[in-house]
Image (cartoon, rainbow, N blue to C red; front, side):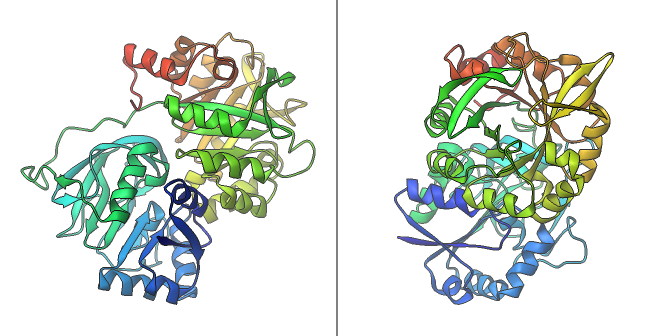
Length: 467
């Protein structure tokens, strides 16, 4: 079966293409409105900013083609931003109307919550017979729909309150989450939808509009293996030196997904200092193997570099030294692709009672205070801070917890703790210090601990993780 994937210029089409290939289906990318009208199955994926994406659809006549499909009941799906485009408007881009196929306005996350919401949360069907069943889904959104359109089958998730995780009607499936990045649960959903086989009856007895208890996932800590890559191989050292070979990035990524990893981070550690972009073939090979979120960093010096990474399979891009030297690039990429798609990686060394930012793979110490720079990066549009203690890197002594507390307490976005953790207990300490995610490399690569072991430790200590 052929499946058409709509390219808006702002979407992570590679992750959908990779899932279709793993499922034995033939996916192809199109910008042609007549193709969108006539194809049996069409998917509108999404990573990007609402206004530019809507304008891109209209420029190609794809808005009218999608309306025609929706009116005819032809099989059409939209994921994350792809869902939002079908509605009236989003607060992300005031004054720019959406496609208006369905009523509703997407609004920002509650002020008390970190935004964007990055990570996994439970999804609960609310009424009707549809394709979505209970499970854990991968979210990456700054905006959400609080009330489902009338007459639609829907499911909910929770983040500072209940919101619409998905809504369905004959021929139309819209998901605020990324099913193609939600592991086997999301893959099963897509297989059911393409085959036209609903899950069966859900809890029709629940009263719509009645607030229920919160669902799991609001505070779930992500466990992230980091793959430092040099010349196409994973390496690991101490304080960015004395590198050892740790294996093939695609094979390691697949292993970590099987163990329960919530995301994979790949950093091309010599791309920046060699003045080149990240090797795209490595990204493509990993994307072909894994169905969870993938963040890529190293050598991102322009909007074109970011676009190539998204096309190769990245869901998020990470900027480090270039962000310090050219802060406007953070703002530009965030403005085009959405802040959930941008990570600013900050390498840090202790300087008396404070910390200084280091760049060029640890070779250059700047005068930047880490808390000041992290706050500015978030203001520029970074959706998350990847915070690495250079002093602790590879030491096995645990994260710099004071550093984690200082930065996580100062920024409105999630912080990934990195640098020095070698045991599940140390990773739990990072989570309790305020990190939204914990990252490790050597502790996983050389078989000392597994992702599964880390999660079991978190659960035992009362910390929430995706099971």
